[in-house]
Amino acid sequence: MATLQERIKEDLKSAMREKNAFVRDTLRSLSGAIKQVEVDERRALGDADIETLLQKQIKMRKDAIEQYRAGGRDDLVQQEQSEIALLENYLPEQLSDEELDVLLKEIIDGCEPKAMGPVMAEAKKRVGTRAEGKRISQRVKALLG
Image (cartoon, rainbow, N blue to C red; front, side, top):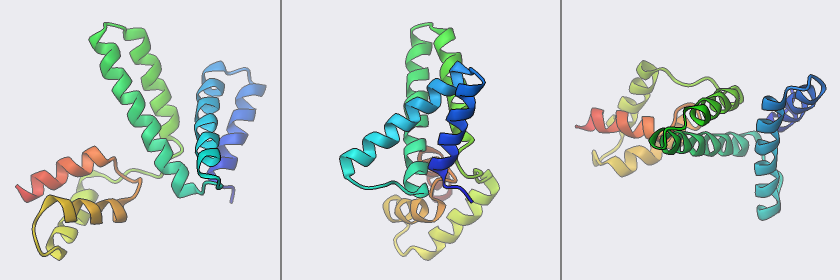
């Protein structure tokens, strides 16, 4: 099975062959971010590292959407949403609210102090990239409160 980075490169080549500028540009941006981290850290990134990077890229785009909405730039909001949808294809399937709640309840029951910090640390370890940090945080607050 191909690594995530190989899959991204193949999809980029396909987009270039098909002259799909949107996919090509989005994947080039992602490839550039991957290369930048590899150069900065002087190591090759594995799938888990790339998934984490994908989440950061998606979060950046969500933050940009808020700014564009405030500025009344609906055209740019649409573009960012499309890029998010494309990038999410490379992440593992996201947990449903029910699955996330079951996992979080397990973690909360296992933690001595029912404090947010230790629960969040364990949740991020177990959930990984299958749920966004903000979503995990909201669910933990609801379950603890």
